[in-house]
Image (cartoon, rainbow, N blue to C red):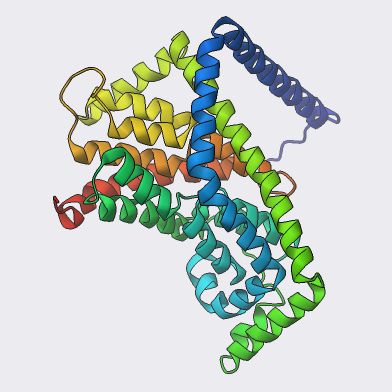
Length: 375
């Protein structure tokens, strides 16, 4: 078998070239956004205020309590308790240590980016490896039930009868992602903490409580100190989330108003026509590419502004499922920021988000005749 040996210094030149290319791309993007903000300041201001409203009225009350609660539960060792109990279930299904069960439960309950926040903590503590963390983040980057049901189904669509379909498609797609990604990456050895739990089936609860007690002793903080630090770190994270939401809301609106997204819109319209769907759904997919809340709202209101007949309800729910499962570049940036201190890679996450979005759409159409019952 022939092997190709790169000349000395080639790898360094490629890395420098990629670094220069990334720097030029980021610089050009920042210059473009700055120019748009200067040329249309009122549009940027209104869009920023809209993003700030979404953060304050929707995201802050939905995410902040879960951020604080997750920090306290980590400090009390609950993650070690659930890890020992769930290891026999999580490893065969998802090739993830049992501690991942805690992240799955918290991630599904509180929505993005809580799964990424908890996974980064587990990777820092060496409780999960890189590939396990990538699978865990890919599976737990999902909407929270309060936003999916309250904001999207009831608030945007004004319908409670679509809740079973949208919820089953979104969370079912996330579980399928976890099952499919178990085949990715190499074989990993079980961690030392999880192995005894698999060898001895009797006394697993006692072992789990002992693991929780050891973790609590190693933490050593009083409840008052733990609560104070949890509030501080959660507030800092919420400010970062809010800044990203405002930035992407303003950027999206300026790109839309300037017409620079025309090519993307035409491409999406072409794809919708090929699939036999209404072109009015293109606005939700364009907006959902950047920000999930704006995309979900546009899916519910597709065609309303033009005065045309609304697309079929199933198509609009499928568009909302796509947007929720893709997450928007705003969520991608939040996840990337939280995972930046680890060895996590973005490309597997990007592929998983695209696959999750496609699976959610397919599940909407597959489950529609079964779960949809008009109110």
